[in-house]
Length: 265
Length: 317
Image (cartoon, rainbow over all chains, first blue to last red; front, side):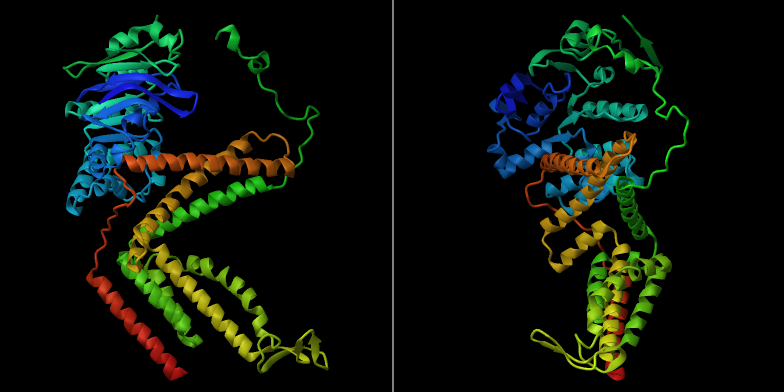
């Protein structure tokens, strides 16, 4: 995926993204950091082909992505199949009558036969332990369950790239941990992860590379998570943290011992 | 906290008591429209969720294929509206009560849902037709005798205003028909999950897009109701003194505006979520309905009952 000099504005003179140049390789884990309103979500929507750059160009899997090229049925189907987007607001994503149908929506639009749809849906339901929820309508799900179902309905399409907008928002610590483990596992299986988050504590675990946006809607830094997260000056300058910020680092030992240490400057 | 965004001093003091310093007992306020509205919305929500619960029970009608139920409902309602004999209509109603009982619907709820409201509205609608001024017939109860014919513009009315036999029997028949049709509709819809009911409408050749829109409407009504309840509750939690009706009206107006804005934003996001998962304007939907032996047996007995009802009508006249 390549973005070249991409700018985007919803209204004239209200720039949301400015001169973005970004390359994302297959199998990479990327975390996008930035203060509220810095343009992270708009970037994700461009990557998912939901909105289109006002300037510059976006190429995915070697092909130019524009409104016009997405009108090509074959390209559109393969593009949608290869990129999955998990919205911040699960309610927007869960529009079907029950969990089973929600998970089946994507595979059905891909025109898979009913047996394959059945196999995929049941496989994802088993993997994410959603058996008890499969007949429930979305309004009877808790926040964590909604997020699980939202993930399930994107995984059933089996995309190569997963775009996640604030995935840990509103989740309890246990569900957050479950989600992080799942994301790491998916990445190991070869999926590319592009995550927007404010949760700096998880960035290390779900990122090979961190990209930082400033409030002028530009990318100001990118690099290894350890380098970026330890650069307090940078994070302060983009208004992401205050001067009292400190990080909690989780380190998993191969011997399955789990240590926490706490640093405060 | 730096000096620029320091909290004002009054915010750092412990809160005021908010009670009258003389220690008098406050006036008890009446339940106003605000609370009433919240309660009504919450009640509606609960009711709809409750009826989904019936559809999840392990009763007789729940086991039938939703497509068979839609066809059965149409056959039964057409039969009920074509029959003239009140006795046969009562038998059909009693059978529907048995069906309700074996489908885990409490009879109390079954009666209450239909007979408390429907006959009332139907009765008001048919009330004029029981009088001889609207529908001439044999007098049953005489109400007023004016002694001479009444002339009202181009219309001439008989001297006696009376309730007629034909009027009463016509009104009773109509109330029965409406009551039974609504009871049957309630029975079949309450025992079918909304989503399945919508899909079953495909047997009536409803377009897929129409069914998808209906399903989504049903889904998002809940979300919008929840947002509405949240708005009312948030308002209530900040309502300290009495609100006059003008303020109340302005709150409701702004709540409507805000809800419209939120639903618009949500609809855009939902569309994006659908696009992102491969939606191309024509949804592909799938149903897992199976026509079983039980469905066949049910349809057979239904046809026999309907034929018997029409046979009875011919014999009894």
